[in-house]
Image (tube, rainbow, N blue to C red; front, side, top):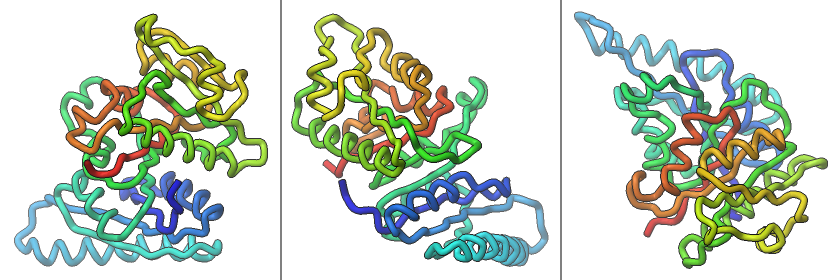
Length: 275
């Protein structure tokens, strides 16, 4: 697994509870990484002087962002800040992370109603479209130590591209689990057809864990992964994207999409190298 040197934490301007920053601090404490606190704002408020409005809003949020950064620095973290003005903040995230030289992104996520999913493009999915490094989506309101980690794998798939992604998924899973002295690494292999069944001993050998930490479950992959995560009370699910093309083609049958929309667990999405 690549070393984490700079963590890109997406700041949410709508709340004082910065879950992404809290999780970034946890990761930085272990990896000794710098935190890049990024805030994107915009106002469509009617004004006779739009430029003046922009200056005022930037100054206001810059002070707020600096206060958050100072509090984080007081706890011993190396923090730099960036504020960007853009009406397309969802699509600005990936480029901003690349511009900052980040190698890990943390963003708060939340469940959305069916109506919301139809009416808007998820900022989570927009980020995954453009991100060039792993993305951790934080759903939990209480940021606890990551004790149980569940890696979602397709142990039947053998193509070289997926094998590289699988290696990264396993490596990140082991690293996250190792951040807690009582950490446990579990793996789930979901299969929809009998031909895709893989015995628990084969999955255990592939991952390098005990068979009692392996879960082989039939049915819809998204549902199977969520069910296992609930059964073992996992704090985070680690999964990979299949290709670095369009989101529609790169998701494992839209499994990641479904997990983002439906699960209450943190999700760490491993991004493949560009094709």
